[in-house]
Image (cartoon, rainbow, N blue to C red; front, side):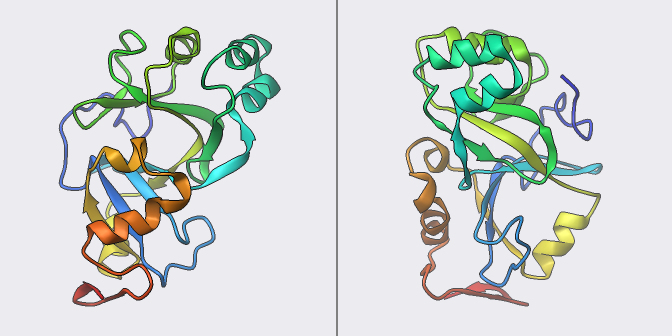
Length: 204
């Protein structure tokens, strides 16, 4: 499917991707308040990522059935069918993305590598392959994504809206959705109940 911001075909990492953005308590934008964002691309053209702690009130099977009968049937028969879909962000909410373990869904030249073991893509063949497969995890579906214009994300970080965190696969493979933000804050060495972000950075 379409490449976003020209980054789906670019493989080299930046200092933010792959990695996470931890929403600061003062971030009031309803699209991102309390969120943990997996940054999958960060280039001169901008940045993109996926909110990984905001499940939608719909399962993978229910969502795919509403858009395509064949995919819905595959999802209903799949080990992944009852997993919730995640609201990946406010951009392109008509598009479905899937996070999966590399090598579990065949080759996908347009997939974005996320660390050593994971990838995120939006091609139908990959999705069908995953739904037909044996369920080697993790698999997470997203509706939409988060996108930033050139230097927008850097400015938001400088203003204290986000705290960058190094990529840790466990946050998206083992930690429950509801615990991901607080787990990320603890990985920063901070207390989720009382950390602040000021001009000098995050502090307990």
